[in-house]
Image 1 (tube, rainbow, N blue to C red):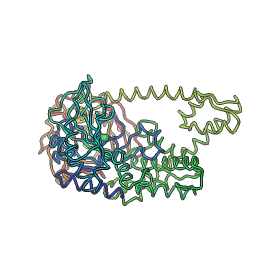
Image 2: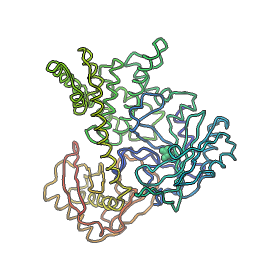
Image 3: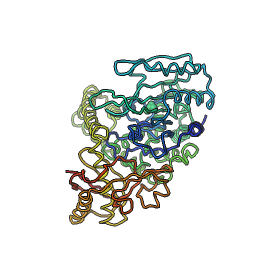
Image 4: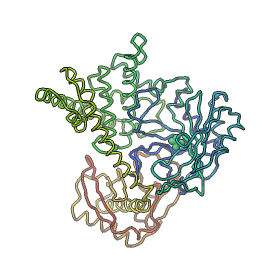
Length: 580
Ligand code: ALA
């Protein structure tokens, strides 16, 4: 089966059950600092799962781009990926267990024609927080599923996506023992104290991984043999002169080659999608993940003897997979030149880094006849120099690295960053929602102020909010003068003092655009959108297509102050601002 068929069938099936299709959200969460990437279909829908009405109603369906980097070290086997697509259907307080399970069953057996006997399911076994999910099991039983297991929270409970938020027991579906789908019954909200409060309006959230399910349905035990990855693998075979499936080779060598090809195709595909959503390689957060993905791909290329620049060519094969992506992700086509250029430049840069790293290693070898674990960690940390290559260099000189010391430092460092990112998670939308909400409205006023003072060429190109500050990127050619900064601040503060109402209207996309509501150029929006206006609907100060949430009146926002400005790349500026 082709991945595209699965996606089309899924969307069509749920449309026939009254669901509205929504476009995939960008991979980088907007106005949400809780995570670097969208990691599940429900993730962009959190405000709606918590009760905000969705402009398209209570039944939604989509295919959502996701990135999970927690599993990055696992990539290389048959079924792990950093980027993947997730199919999902949602009931926002509409249907619950009975319909959700019946829809899943009907789709699997009637649309995908899976034999009942090849299906098995698991349900939640119950614990102190929530009871055993006998209801789901009974529904499955009535439908004729014989293999039903009850498993504890670690297996049959999903969410919250962060530390707090909607979550609940789930029921998972397996085809010949392989998991293909998960129906989550979001009945609880985990609060900051770690308690599970019952939601007044329970939701259904489901997730089906496109890569895994396409493979399983095609009778393949390797996701990389599907039409999603084969064009990329073919390109790597061509570039390396090696075969993905090579029967003449001894098994271990073949599997090393396969592993490298999988890592390259996974990582470059991720890089393509991440760049398409506006991220550039750098040493921080999402940009750093992107950098690591490209670098890891280059390192794996070395295992296949690919010493010349290849990432751009592999990236092109992802962009060329029109069968799979055309029409769903317009951002790929819109940004194709930029994507290829960024990937190529990053590769050139990294190859230079490798050269200077090698030089550094050889200097250490000549001087000290050794590279210590901490020197190796420094090279790894500051140059991004792969430790395997340090080991290889030492090996050439009959030396060997104290890998235990290196690993100890790496683990300590990872622990530190984990604590940092857990802190980051805590400061996000989920926990400090009212502070973040104020910053969100401040972002709209700032956007309006910049356009008012600097001119309409100013366009938002990104934003990020924590509970301590907002960051706003926009198109503009030069640094703001002190006078301009003062004027922008005054504009925002005047409108805060006026205690203006913030109104939300739901309208067709075309009408929203006609009404002058600002929106991201190139974003794919649903046919009906919510438009937030600050001021009166007739004489607004700011009007933007946006998912919210926002304050009801500007008066409660406090005093707005710009604390820093810097360049955000060519033709782009970045300002940081706080509310005091
Ligand atoms: N949110 C659920 C998942 O990611 C459906 O598996």
